[in-house]
Image 1 (cartoon, helix red, strand yellow):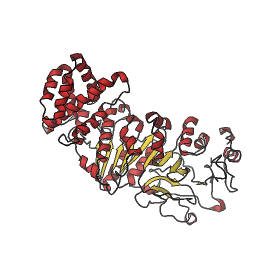
Image 2 (tube, one colour):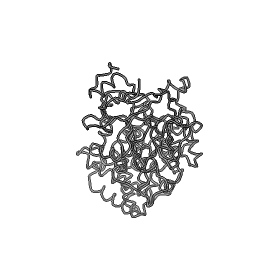
Image 3 (spheres, helix red, strand yellow):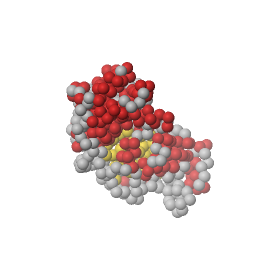
Image 4 (cartoon, rainbow, N blue to C red):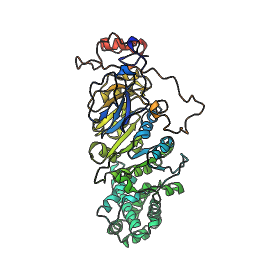
Length: 503
């Protein structure tokens, strides 16, 4: 089928082709299928443009300025192949990547090292076979700092999220206070070798069996907040303290077994390096089936790194690109909301990936529109149902669900800030010439499958619909040289979708 408002090449022109290389350092967000660019929004470039007739080479669409990115695409639609890996193979700034299966680390670690980066793979389950690093979230807290108590509360909030139940409000509040007291005791009164979450968990579990002994321990701490915690816990009855300890145990229960204890032990990289924007490539690897059971660990690592970046007193030369694959697994995540909607100037770019629009709406019911509106790039592709396609069309203001379903498998709706949504080609690091020689093989890729995959559809130009009236964005006369499917012709001429049987 022919691409929407697209044309094969009249007059015997050669087929379109992709360039052999890419200029500059910008993040590739798509290949332009337009012959002429109506406008070039601030912060974007189209590479070194040459007349299309000179070689029929398409232009890249590069995000060279600041700004967040949002991608909406279901599982298996090509988010890694078309978005994450191309960015990691080129972007020279520091990156932090939520990489559930470890594929992105396996494919790009060599390239990142060649770019001068220290590669850190947080892989407690050993999925990648790469050297596993450690990251102790307690590094965020300096108990002697004026902000030490607040930083401890920030960390504990990642461990024990509010359930939203009014009947649990008291228990959760007191459990957080208990965890704060224990954390500050560990950091103030114990030797550095014991400054770990595993030690925090041990003390909380001891409080379940002997609460008064642990309260006595806290009351003798050198940190005033730990002593205040002991005083607070001594007010209620023994049953009350037991309930508080039970809630606190839930917050640290994921630190069970030697693998998680090891992964959260003494850090193998400097958190100050993250704050400075040093050349670091950090991959957080947790298998998909553990994202629920170990979601607290994921939130804790991601939240600690984001909080560290928000401590910056000066912008680094290049922004830190924070890639949040399967962002919904973080749950309602205040750090992401703040990063996208409120905080600017910290040198932080987030790129969040969602399986459908409803995930974003469910987790951020009051802020999802603001998060979309504050993003420089919104990509939508791979819709499998009319409902998903209609939601995609709605957030970028492009046609209807049927229009989205008619996209080819390697096409997407792309909206960059300051321009209307267009149809663009999805990159593919495995076949696009600009990435050849940069990547290693994906160990999860089926060796029996054709390495090239199914035949690619020919590249076809995208022609923006005319805008004679606001009633129908895609209701425009069909150019004489445009070869469209019968369905699209009827759509453009009548303003009504005749249905998939009219192709």
